[in-house]
Image 1: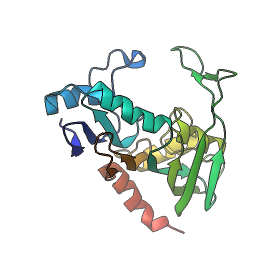
Image 2 (image 1 turned 30 degrees about the vertical axis):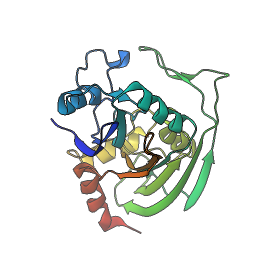
Image 3 (image 1 turned 90 degrees about the vertical axis):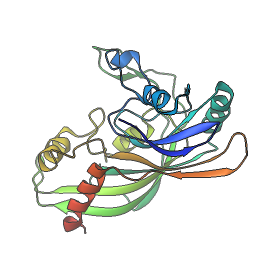
Image 4 (image 1 turned 60 degrees about the vertical axis):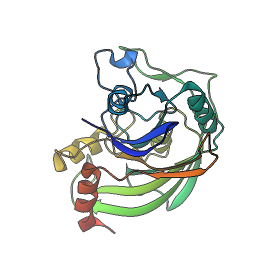
Length: 241
């Protein structure tokens, strides 16, 4: 299956990564052969080098470089928070209208067969700004509540810590719908029953701004929502408040 290419020149290529696809092969999924890197090599006929990453369940704008030097220059922009990233997500509950989540994140132990836990002393600054765009209330019982409350949120993380958005909204007690690691199992169970064909991690990297590492041009790349996200949002229109 070919990837949706958002931009390509001799130096880099950007795609709209689909949910469920790895960026590159990893020891955490040793048996998984399919990944963006492999697909792009086949699709472009060129060797590609990862610049940043999106979680497997996250869709949206993803950049790859065609040589190591361009990859290094782009990675530096991400590391120094010189890019502007915009995400959209669906979260549990009615979150604040707008806010800044300033909550340091530590590395997590992720050994297979062991519970995930923080590695003390590895905390790094992490800041996420958000704006609530819509609120929904569905007449569906969730655990001890007689209705399901959800918020559609625009998010701008300053850094790119691992699982930053997912962990930050868990910290707010507004975990993302479809998040199997940090989410609410009650919400996920009900959401999966309502949208059995479209249920997924509701997180999408919708917009990315960066300076082209060779030309210096300001680049703005936008990735459309997947059909699954659109279907869920359309069905939620009936319950907007």
